[in-house]
Image (cartoon, rainbow, N blue to C red; front, side, top):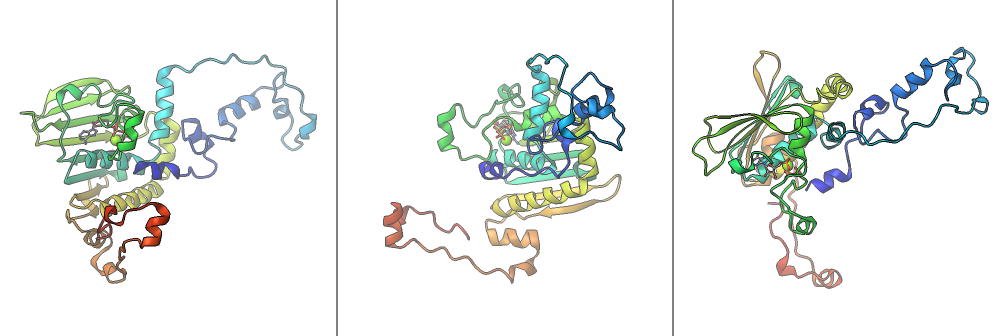
Length: 328
Ligand SMILES: Nc1ncnc2c1ncn2[C@@H]1O[C@H](COP(=O)(O)OP(=O)(O)OP(=O)(O)O)[C@@H](O)[C@H]1O
Ligand SMILES: [Mg+2]
């Protein structure tokens, strides 16, 4: 479930104060925003930062700093579009999160076949296609709106959630951070539809598009609406890509009966395989597909034993209700 992943958010590398400015929830805390620091340094006196006007070789001792004389700034609400853009960078933190969100949506839609296409390691394009249930026409408008979801209606539904997603903010965040086009064909539809979205998740183009049942989400230029994050993303793409592959491998292993195939194409070069599984119903076979058949030899089978009477009594369990064959 996502909750587990959320409990341990990916850490922004040290010193990423500028990226934090654009909404990285991890590094935002105690860091001085670079712009504020620059602004202070640019003014020679008359502000809180009069120390900045002194020669760099002789920094003033802290206690000698003059008191702040500038009037307090008014506290005002940030406009809702800016809030949306900033907060979207807190939902989709990295390449790994973007791919994870799309794969989770495909799994939630009941797909048994998921294709992930990356161009230039995901900086140019991330495209996830599935053969799931597709999206019905009446849901097109809500598909990419903030907190619109088909998975829960109110808080009490959370107890019964069995899907990966439920917050209704992944697609809306991706719209705020990139150019999003979705191709979908619901099982009840005769023909598919191509939908182009703006950064607020509103449909700007809607045209018929022939495709089989399922959905394709096409994300171009992830993070380009947050220029500083975008630069950091491109600069760190090797690390981002490596993390994304790890996340994808984990989903490949746990997704029994789902064929997952991911490729990457650099420039006009040949597509290379990143990871692929065969849709096997066995966890072990998925591990073999991801890490190679040889690795299976070094695995020790995990045997699931029913809890004994004392354990059942202590924890109020009923041995017959316990899930079976969790590690098959
Ligand atoms: N691949 C897909 N196939 C079918 N429906 C989809 C697909 N992707 C998204 N949807 C629909 O769009 C809705 C919004 O997706 P989104 O990922 O933004 O939110 P969510 O999955 O409900 O919650 P979360 O933000 O926690 O992932 C989903 O509830 C689902 O109904
Ligand atoms: Mg989702």
